[in-house]
Image (tube, rainbow over all chains, first blue to last red; front, side):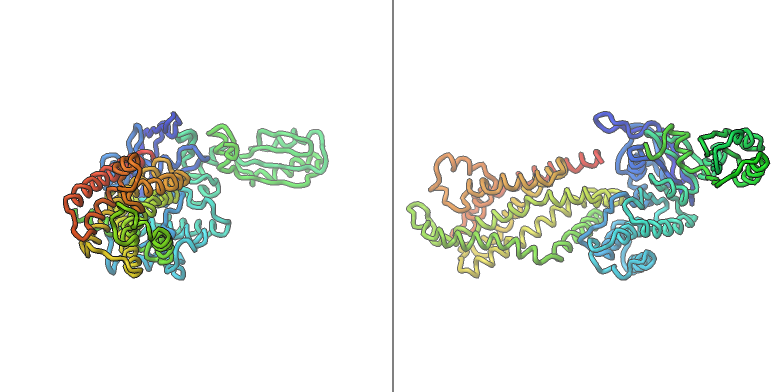
Length: 313
Length: 258
């Protein structure tokens, strides 16, 4: 059984904005699925449906075995949600926020106190636990949000753009934290993000969303591997005739393009192709200024499947 | 049922805690009633000598008016809280937990009732300290507080409905500016109905703020007229039920538009 299973979800918001158009996905137990796409691709709508906030026009979904449409109450008991907007009560203290959250899941007494203390400690909020949340820094607030989502030990955790709006330092700390959560075999995580590096770093598997559908899916490494190899860029000391031909003779190197002093090509294994390429150019008497090898990025994957650069989407 | 009650308890405790945490706010909400009581009370002291006014002390007359007006004035801001909870994502955070939906609405109502009751009682105490007399005794004051709580529920529900529907703070401010003074002055809050122009008396008869005043004044008089208390109180209750019903419907609609 998958922790999350969605089939053919469709949802149109009035006056006819298609948010989801046949989206389907699965998240396995203990897995982190990164739902990657630009704003408006349908990520948040997907999370809203799976967390029972809204209903799809058609399609079906199960979370931890419970149908989100027929048993929303059962779903709510087993999910933790960290949404884009904080949601913590700014007038209450961090501790009170956690205690209330626990009460809403039926926790109480010493068990809840202990759970709260442990979470405050773990998310490094012990010192500010007695202060009103409105005095928290962005990073502290976000850590509290995650702690709120974990109070009741959910089986499935939804992280909707957990690092949007954080400064680089706070983002790095949040990544650290999410990586730790990802190690929990009992919990499945669905992470939405529009940061390629975030999905690349945190998700075991990535699903790329575009216009309300999944256009590609797989482990980040595999998705990138499907692209035809690494990009190899070579800069020559000066523009030389015959450089392109010399490079083309190297086994495993293809799609050689010349732009003045710059040569670029693709190679299945960029690092392995470099010595041979340099040797071939040297043999032809061509002087090289620099070489760079770039691994294909998720950006390249997005370009391939959605037909445009991520940044332009 | 017990689960609903525990949920309601926790959700209400949250709101009351936030409220208790800002005692300054309570003091500020009492400044205006105090000004109305003492400024108006002194400025128009001699109004009672007008033939047909029919009351001994203007301060005594003014107290229910100020209590009821303040209840409307503070309840009308309820929608601001609703908008803030939606904007901040707090409402959605609750909606993805197993908390009973009705507990969220119950908490709004209970908080509103408690804060209106406390505010009303404090104004009564303030007036009492200034020398106002309550011929109807404790019973009369109790009816005054209940009437202002019901009236507060009417306007809090209205404000919440607009807040959830339109989600603009300006709407709530506009509503409050637009309604508060006309509702107050088209009632017996400051002037005896017998001395109002006739058309105004007719308008006042359909003014819920005036229903609350009729109810309270009937109970506060030396010889309470319980018939009026019950009938006008019932109108008020009916309107409160309708408005709260409307706000619950709007809440359901909100859940569909998330």
